[in-house]
Image (cartoon, rainbow, N blue to C red; front, side):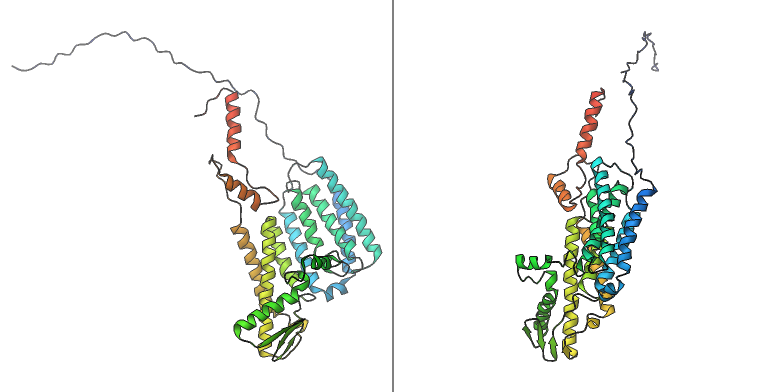
Length: 375
């Protein structure tokens, strides 16, 4: 007998389902977009700055004989001008400027213009070195504070300091007018001081001579070799001097927006690179030539100096890449305190990235106040 399947149907009453919908209050207030402020200064501001700079550089131009004798000051001044031009073109012009910053910019430009007139009346360089360097530094700093609103005040002031530094090494400049003597009295006869650059070269040359077995006798003010006496290391007064290496490193630091710590370390390494190259060439001259004190033209060969500048620039950029702030992922909630401290120190005086959890916390508080639950 075959099995048969019997299908039965049961009627079921199905009620209509009501979909429950939670009403979410709409945000009535539109999101506020933070405005971008730009400087509202007209052409008159640029004209005042141009007048001050023309007076300054006219004083520099009529003192061309001074810079012809001090090529180690002329070349750093040119490098500083190029660095400031690049920093101004690539600078952030949009930002929010405070009232104090505006007033400070006006004051700096007014003082810079007055000092420029005073320097022009006082006479050519080096007699007016202090006035000229102060005038150009204050003018650039005041212009930057009023135009580069997106840049920090520290960076704007650093641009003025950069262009004022080279002329400070001239006679009657603020870097040579008793400052080095006071540092020597305070620190002592340290071979790392700029005034003792020759002694630094003599000391390292003696170390290299001992390592290579070259007979020599260190003495006050030089080194006595069998082939002659080394009396001058040509640290200043020539295009191959130490100031050019320092200016190259400092200009790269300004263009690359490096922090104060990185810039100081780069300056220190460029100084050591110059001592190494200069001492090596002095030892080479002592081993091959008769020495009665090297001439300024023999301070360093051009190919060696170009390689020195290449090493200075490469070291500067490597330090900037190695000692860069740690990038913080915005999606990362927890960031260690050590990372925050490192970023704050390594990017001083401009603080590093802020803690992203603070932004997340603010969004959570805002959402909870509107009745929105975050998963």
